[in-house]
Structures are given as C-alpha cells and as structure tokens.
Length: 216
Length: 170
Image 1 (cartoon, rainbow over the protein chains, first blue to last red):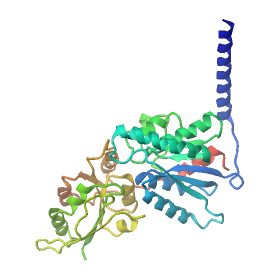
Image 2: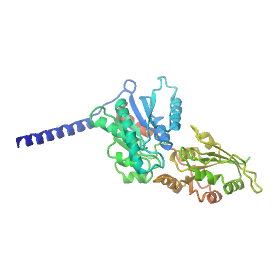
Image 3: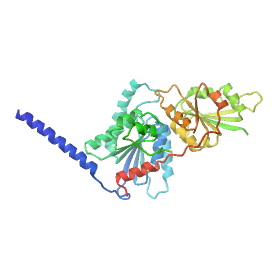
Image 4: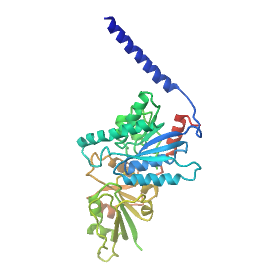
C-alpha cells in the first residue's frame, strides 16, 4: 500500500518537474549574436513546387543561418541542381558558403497509393531520424512534403528529451488555399511556428500565423 | 514571326496534356490564333511528341519542340506569349512572377488533387484561367486574356524577420 503511494508521489513529482522545465524554457528570453553564434538550419525540400518554395524562403535567410542543410528525396536530382544554383547565387559574401545536401528515400511518389505510402514513409523515417539526431539543427524549416513529417518528429524528440532546443517552423505550401495538407494537420499542434498563406486557411486554423503569401 | 506558346508539366508526368496540345486539332487552333512555335517541357512523361512541323489549312504552321527537364525554365517562360501549365504551384508562380498569361490545365488523374485549390482561387481572383484536358482546345479559342490582373509576389523576407526575432538575433 505504501509502495503505491510512493509511486503516485514519484509520478506527480516528475510531472511537476516536466511542466516546470517546459515552462521555464518557453519563458526564457535571450539574444544571439549574428557573427559569433550562427544558427544551423535544416530545410526539407520536397520535389518540384515544394523545393521552389523552400528555396524562396532560404534565399532570404541572412548569412547568420549557417550551415544550411538541405534534405531532398533520393530520386530528385532536379531539386539538388536547383539548390546548388540558388546557393551559388548567394555568393559575394566574404564567408565561405556552408551548405550540405542529404538525400533520403521518398515518403511517397506522386500517384503512389496510400497503403504502400505507409511502408515507404516508415523507410523514410528510418533514415531521417539518425540524420536529424546527428545534425542537431538550431532550426528546422519545412513546407509540407511527406518527408518533413519524420524530420519534424525527430526534431520534436530532440526538444522533448532536452537534447537540443530546435526551433521548428512550418510554412504550409502556397498551393493550400482551403484545405490543410496531411503533414500540416499532423504537425499543426506541435511545431513552434506554423504559417499559412491564404486567409481561407487562416480562418480554419486560428493557431496559424497569416501574413499573406510568403513565397515568390 | 508568330507567337510562342510554352507548355510545362513540372517534374511530374502529364501525358494527356502533352498529347492533347500537340494533337492536330490543337495545333490548327494555335496556328489560327497566330502561334508559330510550341515548346513543351514534358518532365517524366512517357509520350514524346513528334518534332515535325504541323500542316494547317492556310495558316503558317506551328513548329513543335520539346525537352524533359531543366534547372530553370524561366527563360522559356519569359520568351513565350502564353503558358499552358500543369497546376503545380511552382510552375504557376513562375509564370505569374514573370507576368505571363497562364492557362492552367488540371490533371484529374492525380490522387487527392489538392492542386485544383490554387488554380480555382487564382482564377477566381482573376490572375489566370484554368480548364481540364478535355476542354483545352475550346478554352484556347474562347478565353479573354486581357481581363487578367497581375499577382503581387509573396514576401519571404517576412518569415526571415520572424525567425530572426524568434531566435533572438539582433
């Protein structure tokens, strides 16, 4: 009987500890130097339009976001070429441009059925988790290809286990006007900042930030 | 020198569009509308249009050329008078960004087809026209391009500024 009480006590103590941890982390305010303390950022390029959108965002990030890690699907050589092209355009800065491209298996090919998608998503997760744990980025930036689901959850694990306070930003794709993508629905409640680009979607998801279209 | 039409399907495959736009019926319509050059970006499609020049009744013929993928199709869009595009957001944004009139052709075969959302919205707001593969030729004949208004570019710098302040960069 006393043992039961003991466990209940332990349970509540750890709960209080966890709440305190989360609370103090959220309320902490600090400043960061652009020169001395750059932030590493991991960006998930999907294919086609997703890549275009993420690169549109990437090119406006200052040089204090370094190194920049890009994740592309294995079968997507076009996205890789686009990333190299955009990174070259950045040139002109004095510091050497630090970026790296990693490939992981696709979660879903266009036109693939939902059932086999589950299997391929598992395969994609297996290679994205170790990658995120290894890189431990300061920021994860993504815009909704299936690949970003395991990447973001790996980032959440880093946070929950207090390994790294990774800031996760999700920008719902420009093509989502009235309905949220599956990735968006899954990640909406968990990420640190969630952007939508159309007022129709902002109305349905009041927790999302809306500042008009943010990709060009 | 006649006008140029550029057809793009992005990184996907959209054989039914490529077949339709290079069909005799479509090429005749284009010739009648004053087009002399059709360039098609066919992505991963299986159907390869013949590069021959079409025969038409009385109008100068339309010459057809195609390629699969390029790092950037910006030059092709810039050089064209009209773009026929799949509904992919990237291609649509490329065209709107360059101020080109766009006819978006919706691919009904895609799963979940959320792409139509964007085409519907942008058409409703008067920035582009859209149609299905079946009514492509009719649309080319009848659509009014002068009523379209430019779409203001998005502002990615807003996200960068937000991130700067969230991370405490000063």
